[in-house]
Amino acid sequence: MPTDTPVAIRTANLTKSYTSGDTQLVIFENLNLEIPPAERLALVGESGAGKSTLLHLLGGLDRPNEGRIFFGDREITGLGQTELANFRNRQIGFVWQTHHLLPEFSALKNVMMPLLVRGVRRAEAEPIAMKRLEEMGLGARWTHRSGELSGGEQQRVAIARALVTDPQVLLADEPTGNLDHKTGEKIADLFDEVHRQNRITSVFVTHSVAFARRCDRILRLEAGRLVEDISRFGAIQSDNQDMTQGHLAGLQGEDAPQKTARGEDGTNYV
Ligand SMILES: Nc1ncnc2c1ncn2[C@@H]1O[C@H](COP(=O)(O)OP(=O)(O)OP(=O)(O)O)[C@@H](O)[C@H]1O
Ligand SMILES: [Mg+2]
Image 1 (cartoon, rainbow, N blue to C red):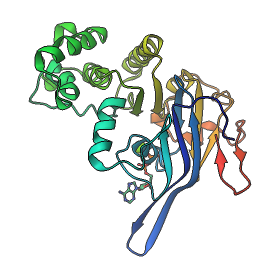
Image 2 (cartoon, helix red, strand yellow; image 1 turned 60 degrees about the vertical axis):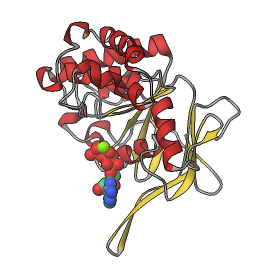
Image 3 (cartoon, helix red, strand yellow; image 1 turned 90 degrees about the vertical axis):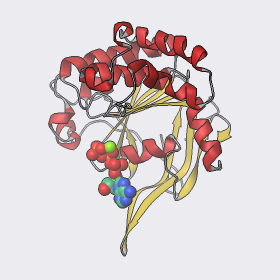
Image 4 (cartoon, helix red, strand yellow; image 1 turned 135 degrees about the vertical axis):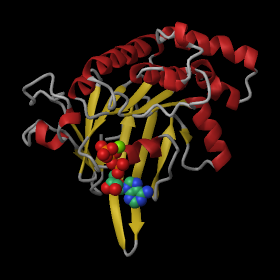
């Protein structure tokens, strides 16, 4: 149920559906989610459940059919395109499964880009971006273009880019999905460190059990509802099973403890 405790992100009766030909595909309806400040939330669920869709809505990259999204007291669902773009640039850092670095630019220029977009002068942006690269252990790679970096290094550049504006919120869609287990662990360590230093509110979409377990809370999107997994995947026997090798539902087990609070109108609050 909604509470009086402060929230960083809140959705109110969020509904998203896609129309394809004559059919309407409802991804979720009346979704009510509250994320407290500094929480690290793992969002899990089967492929096609709507995790990326929800993340895109939270990040203002897509709009819901109905419902509202708030960052603190500010409603982002009411913002126009330009306002929304500015809001994204200032408040949100995104990390994707693939890094989306600009191939023609150096690592440093890629990290500087969100600052340049918002009008920060190059001379000012450069040291800030360099500091972020150094934090990611890439100080010696700043001249490299993305094609001259390993997958893990590219992802670290992408994280540096996401954090260069000191965003309030970090949204990451399968940030370790394309990496081998060991590199994925290192990236997860970096996210831990980032959180320790910045207390940034984070939402991580992931198929990795190990990654999800590092988070404060795990929510599973299933049949259009969000279900809290209070077991922290305790039902799964093996620690090193990675969901990239199988579907979540298959690994998770039907009897994993769950918690949802259902409103009188049938909506669920998590
Ligand atoms: N633009 C679109 N038009 C129509 N249907 C869409 C569109 N984008 C996504 N979908 C559908 O919405 C559903 C949810 O997609 P989404 O990408 O959010 O899933 P996901 O949980 O992130 O899956 P995965 O783990 O595979 O990334 C899918 O069935 C997908 O086919
Ligand atoms: Mg997805």
